[in-house]
Amino acid sequence: MGDESDLLARLQAGNEDAFVALVDLYHPSLLRFAEGFVRNRAVAEEVVQDAWLGVVKGIEKFEGRSSLKTWLFRIVGNRARTAGVREHRHEPVGSIDAPAVSPARFGAGGHWIDPPAPWTDDADARIDAQRTLQRLGEWLDQLPEAQRQVVLMRDIEGLSSEEVCSVLDIGESNQRVLLHRGRSKLRALLEQELREVD
Amino acid sequence: MFWRRRKAIVCRRAVELVTDYLEGTLSERDRRRLEEHLAGCPNCSEYLAQMRKTIETMGRVAPESLDPAARDDLVALYRQWRS
Image 1 (spheres, rainbow over the protein chains, first blue to last red):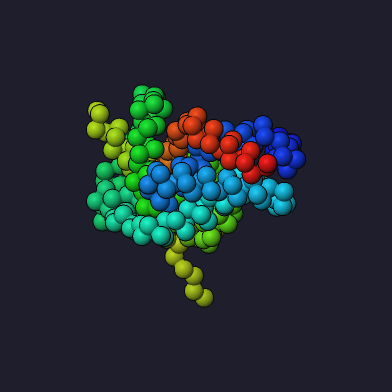
Image 2: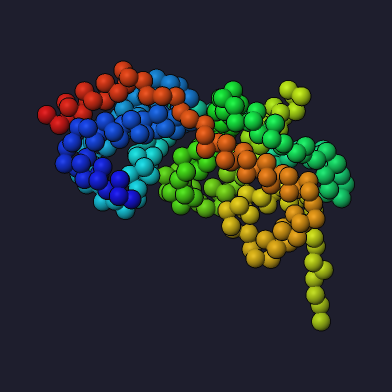
């Protein structure tokens, strides 16, 4: 990636503007990522600030074996996980092992008896509206931590499954299960939202 | 000679396979079975379309914008470290 190698070169040369560009690009995303581990805004801010210090100290040694973005997420992830453990965070109950769709919606033979109503253009417009995007952000935060982090990294931040596995230190198949459960829950909430306002 | 009866995928199972399908990690056999099911099931096809829409929409959930004070703090930190 041409842009990134240029930015990296400037960072390693100690260029302040490059650092600011990196902060502008990634700080909000990293903060949101950290909040998934600690759920306390102030602690998340400390974690990410501490991570940036680690970035500044470590940038000269960065070898580019992963992308800058993955590296940043890994640094924040490690610190945030430690901080989260210190805070004795509790996993929200429920929804950890839920099926993708409520079993009541299928008949005895496994076919839909309460199928999903088609999302028409009108539904699309409502989904794309600011209010719904905000809701999706809130629902994301309500997912169990591991599901939230996987969905965030894959579907919002666009990291690959290998990168997510490396940042979260989890296996491929575990990552897929978490992704599946998180996405299924979000689809269900979106569906519910669209049904209700009708 | 024995052969197994090929069980078609039912809807309740199909909805559990969509993530693996989109990831490309289903076995060749399961992928074909799922696609056969989708070809004949508008409900599951709709479900898959909704999953795709959900995923695509998630990509647009932006984080809160950068707090200018936080940015200033980081610049100060940077200068302190580099000095």
